[in-house]
Image 1 (tube, one colour):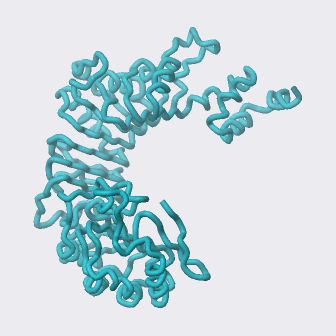
Image 2 (tube, one colour):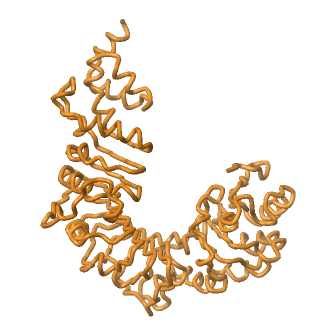
Length: 457
């Protein structure tokens, strides 16, 4: 009783501070302790909702859809939601229609985005929404009584919207597609983060009929699985810092791209063929690119992204090597590099790459097959790492090999004595290198008394 009275004596600000540090699973129990705490902390309970299970989504929808007059406190619970994330099917439009203060909304499943859900969201949250992630789906997969004609002449303003992700798996009714076009074009001068993933047959001109000047755009991701990417049709974004271009088909490579396109670019992820276009030999002013990822390459725990590396997308090392020759031109300089190729010859690899990677701090190489003459990895310290004084992390990824069998890895990997021998030899030539992985299953860390297995997956 004394503790309860002490809590009740606290100002609302301190009660909110207590609620903020209370574990999410314990917060509902705290609210049941008494009416004062319940009244003070209910907004905190409903401020951020993440739903992963269908049963939980249904129960939550029923709760949020309650008429405020029927709730004991008289509160409209849906209006308390600021962040709403649903990872899975969702067709409950009624609670969305009352989320009048929603700021961030994420629907990241392919069977969520029906016209009815989209309309409810737009009508209720247009004035407050800052972030939206949405997967529109075609009519045959609508579980509700959606009607795309509701979007006829419906073009609301979204004055706070700055982050948009649209994943387009199917063709959309024209009026619904026009709604999304208006959403993009009306906010083109304010959106900072834009991601468009197209798995249908759209073109960039369809998405951006007038590229205009996207003056606030900082991050742009374009994924076109069934069509190539036309660089000249990309939104014009002078402030862009991070650009990701991904395509499932061969992209037509232009002779050049305008120098004024993305002059402040610092992060570039793209097919290797496009890299030289962003760092051309004859440019008057080079882009300050510091991070380069080619052909979806990155180091992932235990090969979790193995499905990204398919036989249809295996770059040849000789072709990648030609593209990497443009790296020294960056005004960055480039400090993080990740690339994917079929394989390389461990004996000749250092001499083929060393002149282009001297500024690197992290190097990730994703291979589809074992390196040829892998025993020559022993000499990477003298032939490669000694010429890279800032390199602290070196990762070899076997994710493509695991795509066929998760138990597979490089032939040389997971052999402690061999790996330790290599690491000891490398350490003779560089003091900067402190973290190494020769498979996605584990990694090595360099401590004061030598190398140790630092982590497993």
